[in-house]
Image (cartoon, rainbow, N blue to C red; front, side):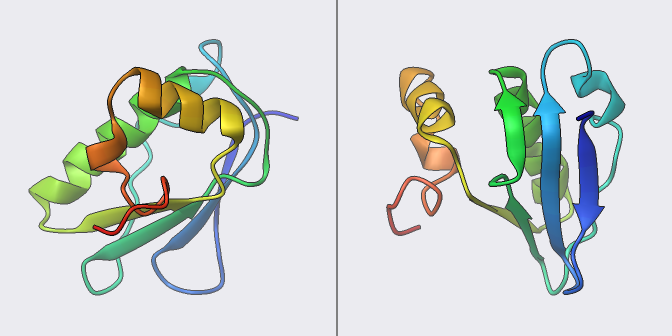
Length: 102
């Protein structure tokens, strides 16, 4: 399944689906997340395959949202992505996703 960013029924909520790898992450990077009241939520539980390029994608979206005074909350991280976040010391960027209070 190719990578797909799907807007959920609730404003500011998104799902990332399919396979996101170095080969196709460039198709998602330019997409803009539209926050609702300064918040964006993205669910990664629908990813069938993901590599570290997903983290680069999330950090890019996070940076753009911060420039707009908005926040990004990530849910549905796989154990492999949690391990990569820990390995790259990115826990402070995704505290809720890692089970830590903000």
